[in-house]
Image 1 (cartoon, helix red, strand yellow):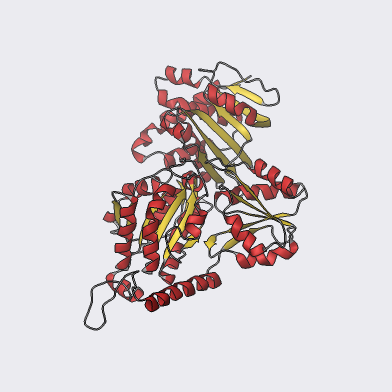
Image 2 (cartoon, each protein chain N blue to C red):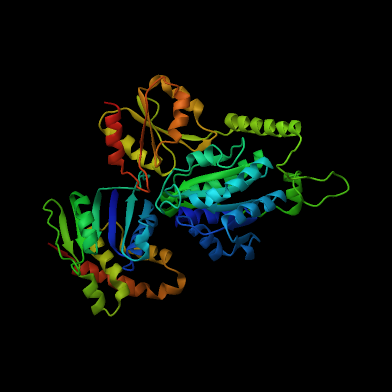
Amino acid sequence: MAEKILMKGNEAIARAAIHCGCDGYFGYPITPQSEVMETLMEEMPWETTGMVVLQAESETSSINMLYGGASCGKRVMTSSSSPGISLMCEGISYLAGAELPCLVVNVVRGGPGLGTIQPGQGDYFQMVKGGGHGDYKCIVLAPASAQDMYDFVSKAFDLAFKYRTPAIILSDGVIGQMMEKVEMSEQKPRWTDEEIKKNSPWACTGKTNDRKQNIITSLALDAAVHEKLNERLQAKYKKMEEEDVLFDSYMTEDAEHLLVAYGSMSRICQSVVETARENGIKLGLLRPITLFPFANKEIDRLVPQLKSIMSVELSAGQMVEDVRLVVNGRIPVNFYGRLGGIVPSPEEVYEAFVKSIK
Amino acid sequence: MKEEIIIAGFGGQGVLSMGKILAYSGIMQDQEVTWMPSYGPEMRGGTANVTVILSDKPISSPILNKFDTAVILNQQSMDKFEGAVKPGGLLIYDPNGITRFPERKDITICSIAAAEESALLGNAKAFNMIVLGAYLKMKPIVSMENVIKGLKKSIPERHHHLIPMNEKAIEIGMEKVQVL
């Protein structure tokens, strides 16, 4: 078994990027995710795997470097935190429109505006519902440990290339800054030029006489053509919902009440479930791992056995809207959240839960 | 076994690295660990604290408001965390700079004059290892062997020649800790 190393979630992202054969990282520093680029700079992968690591002049610039790299079929990524991600949203919309695979990591802090450097989950709407303009969605993965941060990088790249779409890792300050032990995989080589041509025949790899030119664009002035593109995007999103929903369940089999929480809050809610069980309350936890596609079917399956659901978030109530859409009024859907970078203790959440079922 | 610890003091006292060494020592004996720092403006001068959990089972919440042990290294942290020790728990503090001493009757209270001892040793950097020694004397949750292994993992190789000095500092802490 591989050696287990103590590291921050942010560090795990950087090491995973190198190990899974990422071709390029383009970023701009911002707390609480600066360790991603710091670790990459320390590791100097350009001397080993040939991976490019570049500090761009701004977030706007880094996301457009992704557009360039992804157009050539390269496995490229960036990371930032909330205000920086806002700057990238135009680029993410273009990447989605041009059907380009890439990875964007958002280690969320409290907002709005410059907000706080403390943890938050207030970017759920932005990441899950779009963020940029137009009818697009990204695959969104929500890690809850340093090991998840490591494992989800490779998983996100696989999904991004499966669907030719940007994938997002939606983390937060707790998961980014916390150290836990991480088991790392073996180094995978980066794709060769031949592999890129084979894996991504749509990419701009230099036109040869045996094929037509590849054009990467999100622009279609002909409405009929553009509607076709949009229909293709929507078909992809539907396929994601059928094939790639991920979630974790904790003590849901006999649950009468359910907490729904992702990322760091799912860890805290696991403790809440333990306390409730000690006190004889049949509480379970559903932790969505993919936020889009969302665990609609699993929530729907659980509703008949449940008396109530509570969504717990570091926001004013964002994911709770998706839970309510599934539940559709059949049982009460409550909400508990803290704002401004405050992370509630398990006791605080437990009290709120007990109050919600009285 | 599950031990939930808060280590709190000033930035620069080695609070975070003490927590890291403890966490690594836990990994060396195959335990689950989490190390959750306060990473706010504290890092830029002011108070710093870290929550470390060592457990035989997977750890759910890394965020806590009650602790088995509080290691307290300045007055601000005393004010904030004395009340956060679970009944029957342990509070260790360095009296240097403390103006209001702990008053709880339902917990074990220990003092370690780590600032003074590190000055006597002529090495201010030994401070956090003396504190670690005091803690390990009271709660021998990790063996000295695993602490040394943890040290090797958590400090860069170019500093490995300092390990014997750190070991000595831990021993001083173990010897000088006083149960009040």
